[in-house]
Amino acid sequence: MLGITASRFQDMSLFGWGRGSAADKLADSRIEPRLTSPETVPPLSPEEKKADETGRTEPDLLMLPAPDERPNVRNMTPRELSEFAYNLYMDGTLSWDEYRMVGFPSELHPDYDRTIGSLTGETAQPDRPKDMVIAWQERVAFEERHSADQPDQIERARRVLDVLRWQELPPVRLEV
Image (cartoon, rainbow, N blue to C red; front, top):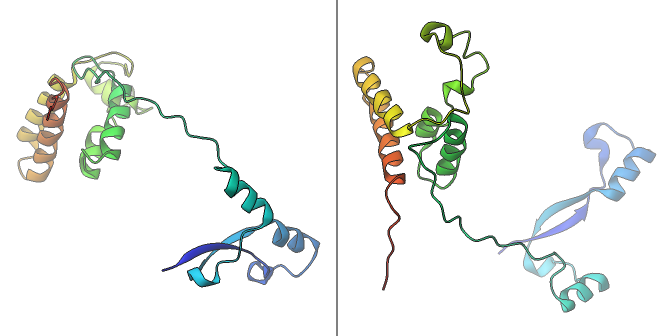
């Protein structure tokens, strides 16, 4: 089993520095982690022993309760969708490819008005709420029409739509 200890980084020659005053100051202030076996872990200093005896040296973390409300995917702005998709990706609900598809709405792109907006005649409104379920139903239909040769693209769009539909369902309460 390996332990981690801190050791002072003494040799600055790796960075092309001699043993001048700047290197000495950096060597005195920088502490590098080093893997060691448990037998070679140095004993605690008197300050560390005192902190260990009195309890934690770090302040306690503030534990917040879980949010009661689920996001309303039927009334969500593209900015909110982007943040929501990031949270779904981080908790493992969306894969990386699904996140890339849903997490970066085109309305958030700075050149939207010059590109897509000029073709559609609309300006970007990233803070205007939309029904994201309907928007993604349209996206799935678009992918089915125009990406028939890319079945994985169609499947990702369907999966995102399924996740959005799942989010609008009431939470399930399990009792034992």
